[in-house]
Length: 270
Image (cartoon, rainbow, N blue to C red; front, side, top):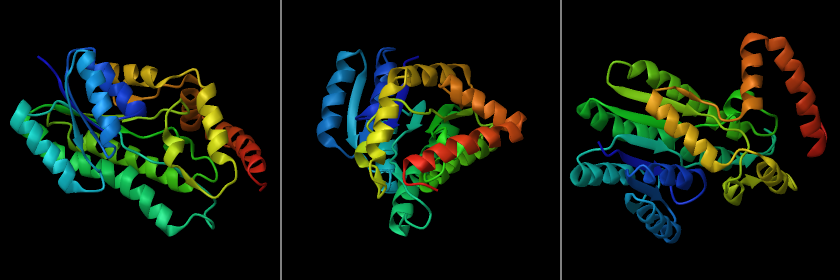
């Protein structure tokens, strides 16, 4: 059966890579995004890659946009099999420097955007008796580096929501997947908010150095959905650190303490 896939933030970065991964399988792929020019270009790419594709202008800050997408896909495709709540932004700063406006901005998109996606599509998937909710979190929600409080909290919120829904929807035929990549090359710094000098450039360098690509993460997501696996942890080093945190917390705390000192020194001392 041809899969029907909807991806928020699908016009660039990881969203685009996931869309192309499903397109190569001949899926029907709908990308939602706030950038109509990029959305139209990616729609052409997806069709060329083998998908039946469409772009819909969609802002995850508006639940009415997501409801409109759901209604359209139900009408045109008879439903949807995979919803990827991918749209996200980044910010950085110390607790005393990050404005409440920036906190509200990132939580509205990164957390409530995922909440809205899950809330809107869960009833449809329950009616179908099947479906997959793929929530893009981050290793930042598990590792919790300093000066990334708002971003860490937003991604930890996505993980908490995903773990909750895994239990809540266990008997509904709906699978839930929490995706937690570390640094990989994407366009996240383009909209990053921060008053820390040079942090966008340094984060960009870390992304470029990563051996993991958006295509690698998309492959891992595709496999996890197919196998019904909850955790998607693409980066081996960070995955090992997470295991250390879970099973030997004192060792993790020492390692993280050393790394935090370097991070704080690099961006202004602490």
